[in-house]
Every structure is written in structure tokens, then in C-alpha cells.
Amino acid sequence: MKRLVSLFVVAIMLISNINQIIYAQEDNIISIHKNYIVELVNDTIEIKTADVCIETLKLENSILLMATDELSQDREEIIVNAAKIIIQNEGSYGSVNKNDNNHGMSIGKFQWNSYWGRALPLLQTIVKANPENAEEILGAELYDEIANNSADYWNHKNRTATDDEAERISELLATEEGKAAQDALIAVDAASYVDAGIKLGIVSGPALVYYADLRNQWGNTSNTMATNAKDSVGSYEAITLYDLHQAALDYSGLYKTRRNRTYDFALSLGWSESLDAKVSINSYEDDSNWCFDVLVENYDEEATVYAVIYDGDGKMLASTLEELKEDDVTLLSEEDAKPLTLPKFENASYVKILVWDNGLKPVLSERIDIK
Image (cartoon, rainbow, N blue to C red; front, side):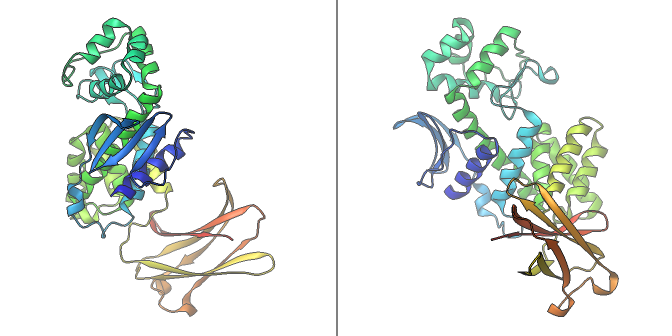
């Protein structure tokens, strides 16, 4: 568990190009922002300065009692990518929406909202970390409102922000303690969104990434969309990314741009949604080419096998494909392997082998690092 959360948040921060993040030797260190340490201690996320604990956030861990080996991808991979797309959809450290859909202000990387009781506790955590700096940034009146009220003071109130308040709150959110507090809350929230989908019975990694973004935006209404998808395909375990996307679009015509962006992101991961299909690859090289013999097993539909070569920055250099037809969709011997060839590039870093069905849904994927 400690390793999972540590790797997850460090990966998110590296994706975001935050130079302060350090992956320490200790497994329980999540991130470091100058004097502020985000740490996992006894299934809680703690924000510390030196040995003083500033704030403790409970990490929901009931999912650990459930079997997760049926997931199509590792849980930590799913959580990392769920957090990544939510951040893309929501905001940056200093983002402030003064009145989000008439529910008051939303703040920070995950756009925590005041009406739903998320914004004020986050601000209180930041204020508690450095009261003097917070009061200087916020001013006496706004500081008093944030620091000296209960955590639920803004709950179910349309607490909007003025232009001046938005500027002050944005500055506070972008401080080192503001970043550390948001890192901690992202760790808790992204895991809880994914785990809620797992508890329903969704096993597709791409669908869980998509569900996490639904949960972030729609709250418990995301379960209604998942249930509608389940009713369409027969079970939660059978829900694919495409099924959940269609259910979300059918449920509401709102936020289609976000829904399509999230769908495209989850699709671009190239993850398999099949638990039974397997791919084995024999890779070798000649004077001018990389060669791959791709063997697909336990898959009974027509599909296309792609080989795509990338440089170290993730830029595609070349690709090739082979079709799987009805008479060879279940390949059981090395003699049946599909040969794919890619030219050599001096700056090549890795190759992805992708199997996609005729509906352009990912079936299998495998990455091969080029030495």
C-alpha cells in the first residue's frame, strides 16, 4: 500500500513537471516541497514540516479487502492515469473558479468545490501550515473566515469569490504548503474514485479511468451512469470504456467536450479490456530492421495487430500493421505468429505492440524497450 501511493503521486507530479518532487528512499514519502513533506503513515496521508504533523487525511483502504487481480491493468496504473486526466480536465495548483455552476468557488488542481464541502478544509490545511504567510496573502477578513470557522462552514452555501478573493486564494494555493496540501488530497481522492468503480465490479482499466473522471465531476450520479451501462451489457464486469462512454452521453447532453476528451485519453492508453486474451512477442533485429513475431491467444474476433516505434519523448517514428482474419484469430503456435517489421532509428526508445478489434477498441497492448 505504501509503495502504491508513493509511486502513484510521484508519477503524477513528474507528469506535471514539478521540480520540487523527490522520490525519497523511504517508501512512505510521497512528495517533498521545500520544507513540506507529504507522507503515508498508518493508512493516512500526513503533511509535515520537520517532525510536526500539520494535517492528516484518511486514506480509504477498504478496497484492500477486495480482490483486485481481476482488473485488466494494475490498480496503481489506473489511479495514476485517472488523476492525470482529471487534472487535465480541471485545473492547475492556482486555479480558482469564482462560481462553478452556481455552486460557489472551485479551487486547485482537482477544482475542489465550496458548496460540496471540499474547498474550505483544503484552505484550512494550507493556512494551518503557515498562518503568518496565509494571513499576509489573504488579508485579515478572509483569513479569519477560513481559519476560525468549522470545516463545514461553507457546506451547501453558495460561497462565491470576488475578483480580489480569487486572486488571494490563487496565490495561497500556489505556495509550497498549498502545493503539498493539494498533492495529499489528490492521492486520497483519485484512489477513492477508482476504488468506487472497483467496488461496483468494473474490471476494465480504461473504463475505470473514465469512471474516475465521471465520479470527480458528477459524484454519486456516476453510479447511475455505470448502472445504465451494466443494464445494457449484462454485468459490471462486462462494461468496457465504450459502453460507459455511451451511457454517460445518453444520460446527459452536458459536458460532451469533457466526456469525449476523457474517452480519447483512456483510449489512447492502448490498454487491453480483455482478461483472457494474451500476446507473446519474439523480437529480434537484422541489419536495418526491428522484427516482431506476434502471437495472439484466446481471442475469437477479427482484429488488427499494430507495431508502433517511438523516440524517448514519446513521439511516433513509424508504424506497421497486420490483419487477424476469421481463420487465424486464435493463434496457438509459434508458426501462426504474425510478423511485423519496423525500420531502425538511432533515436528509437521503445515499441508498442497493439491489438485492436474492428470497432477500434483496444484488446491487448505490450511495450518493448529497445536496448
